Image (cartoon, rainbow, N blue to C red; front, side, top):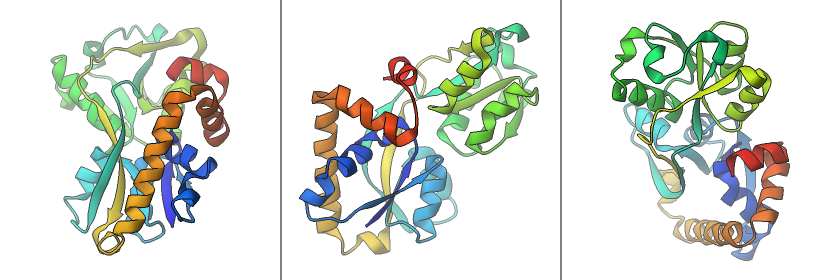
Length: 239
């Protein structure tokens, strides 16, 4: 069983279930195929390279306009603070309202895209008054660093790494709790139709992993560090 897992903290229940042997306990042989973002994990599922994949609801919703042969099997994580709006303090941009007329780097059709669009509207800024610079997630931070964008909107761990690269010049804009990301397990309907036992096994393993994270956070943090290549500073800032 191949699961495409986004290389983010939100995939920690899957990382724990795999590393602690919880999938094996329910009789499943699982391999994790790590992706840079849920959008790419969804593509792995849709193109048949993975049986299950992780993604927020936004890539799912946008893909549903093109096809309806896939489904959300479960939501196993939520967060309202994973996506950050990062600017240079020296730019003078101090609020969401200040983004009017500015260039904003983000990833099209993702939770980050939806978040900044919603934040702009909530703060009275028509998104059409800004210029979006659409890039892959691993390139969003570079656009702010090299001057192609005035703000970068991206999720963790890229947001943290961008802040570290900017140092004292890093500023984070507060958009308010206007959006909660839901992180999901996705599958093709045709595959899932006769796989009730396998799906139930996956969910039991993930549920056990969630309890492990709650009860043994120090060990869970160590698994996260090893899996996505972050350090203790990132864990301390985002846990």
